[in-house]
Image (spheres, helix red, strand yellow):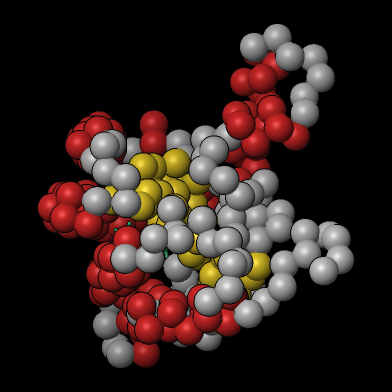
Length: 229
Ligand code: FPP
């Protein structure tokens, strides 16, 4: 492995519905299997000391447009996932953090999220971020409005970078599964210089071996950040 930085890995998990349909299951089965994959990928990342943060796109601001029962299922699944996950976070030294507008979630779910954040806040091995009711444009707009409210009249790029809900450093590598090649409003500011990787695998079939291969490929790329090397 060369010295390519990989402090921050981001994943757009796509293809749960197609995975389920191919097997004659309900779409929700794909989400259930998808949640297990989040655990496996997080464990892999916690064993790779160069990765400091892994961010998963778990629920976008557009996902409310899905059928009501599917949205309800995703909310329930998130609640059970976090409950089951706590011992795993503690075992692997993973700090959990959520980004996005959680105010639209039920009070018990908001409580589960904030309690999990609190209980894992001293874990230092890896930070797992779940983007929940998240949209990149909203995040940037909210940041600018906050800066204006603080009295800033001229706003710099650094002001925005530091004011974002995700001040965890820029993304080094962004992976999207299922063959779709879009950013879908995910971490728009933070992906400016990210290397992008599009996998054909549907998210429920994604695994640590494939991530390992992608990381090998990534470390062989040369990032120029607009300069020459
Ligand atoms: C996209 O698949 C996936 C999502 C809606 C987000 C990811 C959600 C999970 C992995 C579920 C579990 C999450 C947590 C945090 C417990 P899709 O339904 O759009 O697939 P399709 O494009 O094949 O229909």
